[in-house]
Length: 112
Length: 115
Image (tube, rainbow over all chains, first blue to last red; front, side):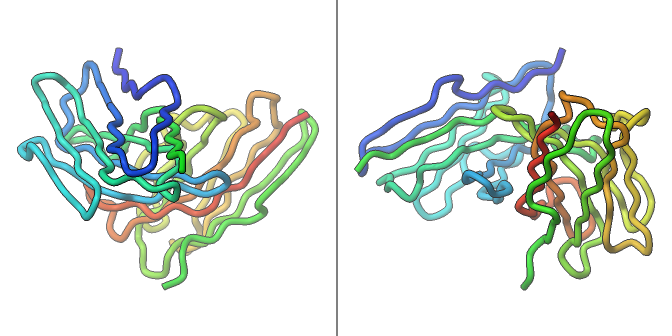
């Protein structure tokens, strides 16, 4: 069956370090993958999209990689700050599907 | 630009009661989505509208859930009768055209507790 797995444990890191979050998937052939941020009591907010033919995408302190051989996307936040503390969701869709399927998210806490 | 609006923000009901949620998408957005997010899980799509037509409702429990988007703008999601397992946050999102890869903009959600 199709499955999306994100870091099962919450992730705590020290301010200034790089946070790396993982999104693994099985039985999908996604044309693209999106990453969202969700704060408590709020809806998800779009961060980055990466297509299957792209290896890496950057936006300010954020970097996403996409390895279709490993069936994995990595999401990096460099020079992390306490304000980066949130839950991060990956979402993917196959080329023909019109809907996104979300992972369960990874809760990131950046300690001052 | 105003974001996606949802109301109410919180609702507590007893099982077997009915409840309705309202969503007003971003102006001009043709596509509207309703998601259910159970605590500790990611959002799960319930229904997708393109203007006032349904594109995908394959995961909507149609025996108790219904949704409409009259005039292709606002939408309501109803649960009747509610069950304990319906306790969740109900998120509404919209996007400009509904093309895959397009960014979805989410509202703050309605938190439902069924007792």
